[in-house]
Length: 227
Length: 152
Image (cartoon, rainbow over all chains, first blue to last red; front, side, top):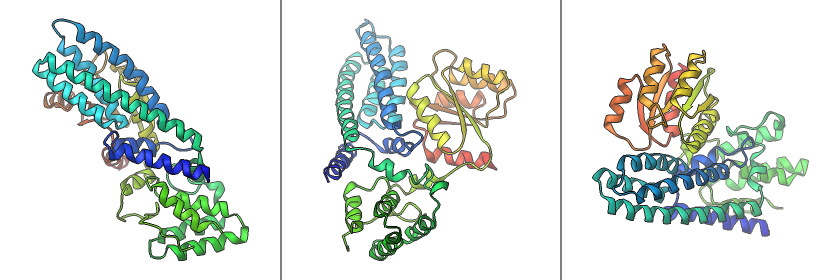
C-alpha cells in the first residue's frame, strides 16, 4: 500500500514536470526506450546530460568573461547545449538556449549574459527536480518493470510467457474499452482463477495500460482485480 | 469490482484515439530487412539517444564522435543503410564529412541533423550529398518513414 502511494506520488510529480513546462514529449521518448535490456536508460541519459553540460557551462562562463565576446565560439557551445537539452526534453532550458543564440547572432553581449544567467537557473531547477524524481523512483521500487517484463520492448508477449492464458488475455485486451471493462476483467479473472495467480492477472492488466496512463488509473484497475 | 476506470487505450489497439498512441505504434515497429546505421555526433547524449532509438527499431547501429572516425570506418569497408551526421562536429564538419563519404562511393542514405535549423547549413549539407536535413530531436516521426523507405 505504501508502495502504491509512493508510485501515485511519483506519477503526480512526473505529470507536474509536463504541466509546468519543464519537460516536453521528448522525455517520453526516452521513457519509451527504457525496457528490460536498458532498465535505467532515462536516468543514465539524464546523468550523462548533466555531466556533459556542466563542462559546457564552465566553458561558456569563461567565454563570457572575455572582452570582446567571441560570438562564434559562444554559438558553437550553445549549439551543443541546445542539441542535448532538446534530446532529453528539457523544455525551458531549450528555450533559453534559443534566446541566447538570438542575442549571439545580434551581437548583443548584455542579452547573452542575462540569458545565460536565466539558463543556468532553469538548468539547476530541472536538475533538482529530476534528481528528486529518480531518487523517489528508486524507493518506490521497480513495479512497472516487473509488469512489463512479460512484454518485450515491442509490446509483444515474450516467447517464454506464451501460455494459453497469456495469449487469450492478450487477445481479450484488444477489445478492452471503458464500457466493457468489467466484462473483460471478469473474463480475465476467470482465466486466472484456475491457476490462482492473481498477481499475474494484475501484471498483465498493468502491462496493457499505456505507460503514460497515470498511476490513478492503474490503481483503479488494480483495485478491481484484487479479490 | 466495478471500479471506475477512466478512458484507457490498450496497447494492442491501433487507430484508436488517445495520447501516446503514436508512441505505442512506434514501440511495436521494427524494420523488415537487415538495416545498419551510423550516428556521427560529438555530443554523448545525442549519440546515446539516437543510437537507442534506432536500435529499438531493430537497426544495427554504431556511433562515432567525429567526421574523421566516420570516414575511416567507411574507408575500412563498413557499409551502412543510414548515416546520421550532426552539422557542427569538433573538427571536420557535417557537410565535409558527407562529401568525403559520398566521394568514397557510399550509397547510404545520409541524414544531416542540427540543433539550430539554418537554411545555409541545409544548402551546404544537401550540396555535399545529404538526402535530408532536420532539426533535433531525432523522433519516431522522422525515423519510421526512413526505415520504411530503406526496407523497400
